[in-house]
Amino acid sequence: MTEQTADFAASAVVLVTSPDDAIAAPLVAELSREYDERYGLNDGIPSSVELSRYPAERFSAEQGGTFLLLLVDGEPVAGGAFMREDDDTVEVKRVWTHSSYRRRGLARRVMAELEAEAARRGLANIVLTTGARQPEAVGLYLSLGYQPLFDLDDDWERVSYLGFRKTL
Image (cartoon, rainbow, N blue to C red; front, side, top):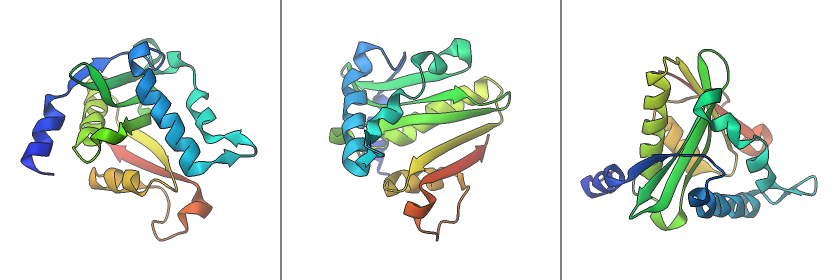
């Protein structure tokens, strides 16, 4: 990452909010479109339905979660969330960078913010999954020290959900 890229990501403002906040809508809409483009239909159901699997409350502080956006000039450019898995673990979900802002360190910043929040809460572990058709996400998580819970040399399409774990 270049110094200019790091400066851009560092200058983004963190907003802790909810996935159903109107300010998050454009980012969530683009994520939905990309899920559907990359993965198509699953048993006749658009892949973006995955985004509504968990109610917004699961990402609230009251239920042990968080949902954050990175804003540049007041516009959401990246985001991510976690929800409580158990007493020691959170599951990261919805890490996303707007297509116009990729390769500027924003996803790395989102992950740093999520990890810092989990650590502040005294949690020991973070787990997450990504899809077989998201090699850029696999690269990011590996570069951040996440351990794959699958064989990297296996056929990712066969594995399907690519799990990772990190101890804080």
